[in-house]
Image (cartoon, rainbow, N blue to C red):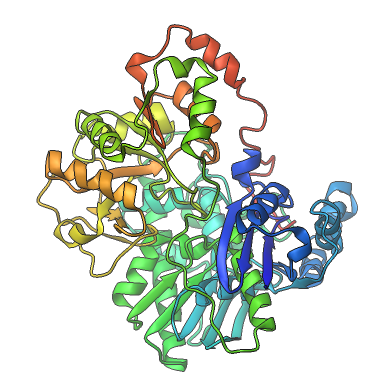
Amino acid sequence: MSVFVGVSAHYHDSACCVIKDGKLISAADEERFSRLKHDSAIPANAFRYCLREAKVSIQDITAIAYYEDPNKKFARQLWAGLPDILYRPDARFRIDPNRAEREIRQALGYEGPIEFVDHHLSHAASAYYFSGFPEADILTVDGVGEWATTTYGRAEGNAVDLFEEVTFPNSLGLLYSAVTAYLGFDVNDAEYKVMGLAPYGTPRYLDKIQQLFASSSDGQYRLDLSYFDFVSGDRMFSDKLCELLGKPPRVPESDIDQFHTDIASSLQKALEGVLLEKVRYLHDKYPSEHLCMAGGVALNCVANARIHREGPFKHLFVQPAASDSGGSLGAAAVAWARHAKDGSRLHPLTHVYLGPSFSNLQVQQIVDASPLGKVATYFRGDEAGLVEATAARLADGKVVGWFHGRMEFGPRALGSRSILADPRRPEMRDRINALVKMREAFRPFAPAVLEEKMSDHFDLRHTSPYMLETCQVTSKLDLPAITHVDGSARVQTVNRNVSPRFHALLTEFDRLTDCPILLNTSFNLRGDAIVMDPIHAMWCFVISNIDVLVMEDCLIDRSERPTAWTEIIEMLGVRNAKKRQVSERANVYSFL
């Protein structure tokens, strides 16, 4: 038996996974356990879960693979931040190159072999090894790893070769983050908000954004660092950027006007242009039908769609947890490949339901121990009845918290820990934004659609199970709750064999409404991690405006809530300080 554990930690989105005998068995983000959004701590809780799910002990581990090289990262941190580090004891602790091994030994209690895998190799491997492609070109793009910010690779069999890289401080990820900060959003957290804001504007400032960098005909590009201050300053951009764009930076949480939407549109257009240029360069160098992508920038689903639609590659695989959490998958895969001697391949990724699950008995025990147990309805062994009851409530305009099976790995809720609603209702988007998600009104919601009916409603020629590409809505139905201002949507296609209960719910909703689509957003409130266990789900249900909570075979209607509502809140506990740690330097990318 071979057991390889992948670990990402000490930056953001820490996570753990287990590959057992060539198959990915379990993977989970630490934030789901700790409730600290973007938790960067060594993933001790996720580690314990992953071993338990794989039915192995710590003594069974062949090796733990860590997703970056601490010594290389240490060299870059010293180069970029030595003056600041000298006066910050906390920073000196965080850049300790021995910290990763020390905490793997101490916090995880592991005494066996540890393998260190370069950050961008972890990204590349996380995409290629799980793609199922026999060979592929690879593009990774993020803020920064050790020194690399963009890499180009070629892979065949179990061999991965990263043959070219762009190095820090030149970075498309940092370029996008700098303008994100200029627009008043948190860095390394809210770049997706800028992507969502972009369709409200026009790229009238594209020429100015393009002055921020220079791209060459090969894989290289360079930032004009006079517009940036992230290397040594307290913010991402310099005063020169404000002068170039003609206005001061937006104050966080203030009104968004046409100028801000036009800047977002210009930035998004610039990113798409340079990414298309670079994938064409990669294809020219090593022609292939297959492209694999990973790194935080690969979560830009609008850019992914253009790469797939307009680029030279026939098939595109983006690793669903493309940011740092997914680096744990790549690190474990590289360690596995280093030890594999028989030419075997890893099992391709067919879903991301890799986290904890809870039995009907566990759910009932938790619910019955609370006042909600008095009004809960149990459909024990009657899945059809549960699905029919839930679909009827959705058709009646109810918002449903849907909790079933193993939790998703990565940033997207895909029908396991989801909030669901009727996409045809024009008021639903505003209602969920204002009362449940408590987030900006301009951000779109995504649709989940029956895979067999996707082409009837969306301009899709291939499945999209992970919400990693956008496409145009072509449905004859009016779908205002999931259609963005530019007529696009970020679609999840639902397969009968992969997600049978979610597929059954969509099928029943289609039977009732002639609409095989549901609005699907993550089961959490703004600033919180996605719910993991029944207690988290109950808490979110209690304090939000969700109408119905479905957890496995249990259904609870909010209209039937008990009179002792205050007692429930006290029982579940006050919303504590673990809600979300907002960095005191949220306007600057942390390189520690």
